[in-house]
Amino acid sequence: MRHLRRAAVRAFSASRWRWATWLAVTVVGCAAGEAAEPVVPAAHLLVPLIAGVAAAGTGLVTAQVPRRINRSSQAVLGVLMGSYLSPLALHQAAGAMLPLVAVTAATIVLSLGVAAGLSRVIRMDGATATLGMLPGGSAAVVSCAEDLNADSRTVALMQYMRVASVAMTAPILVQWLVTSGAPVPHPLAAAPAPWHLVTGADQDTGLVLLAVVALGGAWLGRRIRLPSPALFGPMLATAALSFSLPVHSMAPTGILRGAMFTIVGLDVGLRFNRSTVARLGRLLPLIMACTLAVCAACAALAWLLSGLIHIPLSDAYLATTPGGINAVLAIAVTTHANVSLISSAQSLRLLAMVVLAPLLIRLITALRPQRMRDDQQVE
Image 1 (spheres, rainbow, N blue to C red):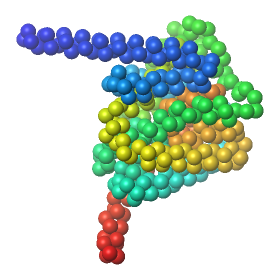
Image 2: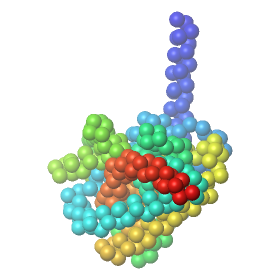
Image 3: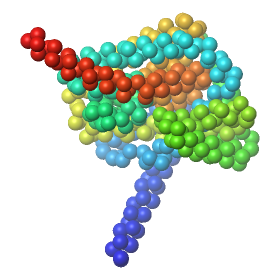
Image 4: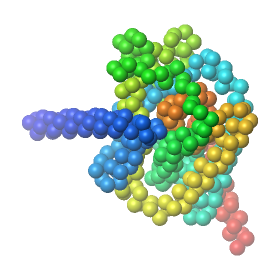
């Protein structure tokens, strides 16, 4: 009994130490992002991401962001995104839905083509190549890789390399693309009081509403089996409440928003540890080339979309870029882009990816044996 008590005390102490460590990392990352804000675009996201890559690559930090912290940041981000999806914003985005669907379909076709070429060049199995190159839903894709008989480690490397590439370059590209003057800020982007954690004047009520909607939305998202329920549940719950409540009063801002973006950046960066990169090091050049090819193709689609629906190229780029939805939406907020349009486009593609991924893998698996038999007959 005494040994069990000591083991429980040690486990509790280790847990408290781990949480204290992550709290310190988040505080330092948030402070570094705040200090870099005047010179680095989307600094609260980009600086922690680079720090996470450096910390994981050197072995200084070996653990991922704790699951509860990660889910909490996703839920808060979901509330922030949902606050942009007001009835007026949804009405404005609806007019561009047909071009967005067309661009989403073209992105999927391009990614499948690149995956097919990759599997032939390095003889990677079709399921792994396809899941690795799917442009969206990285967390959901990686989580279902084993169930679809794919190599989850390779899929994770390909997915998070794409996410990190987009997250590190998009803020700079968007800042460069905005050449027609300073962007018009969204009402939520107005400078808050330094001590404010939510945008409303009544901080206590706003924080309570934020907690209730974030927790309730995440729970509902799991119950109805949404993809990325911690993100989409609160986002849809907030959007639904916007028809009857002033949801802008509970949108995170200030230190809370900076901490949320810091966790999103760390979550991406810390996935690139030494063992993961070393295990698949020989594949890195080709995977990076394929990733850049997909990103370039999506940039071309962004240029086409910008001309079709007459929106800034920077907004079209964020709407079509194949990065992680968390990182892209965070960049959209910090650069004052058209968040309602971008979140609609990214959400549409994520839903399409999650629904289509199992069907595509089954189709590829069914066709591959037949193709192999045909090749043997030709030989």
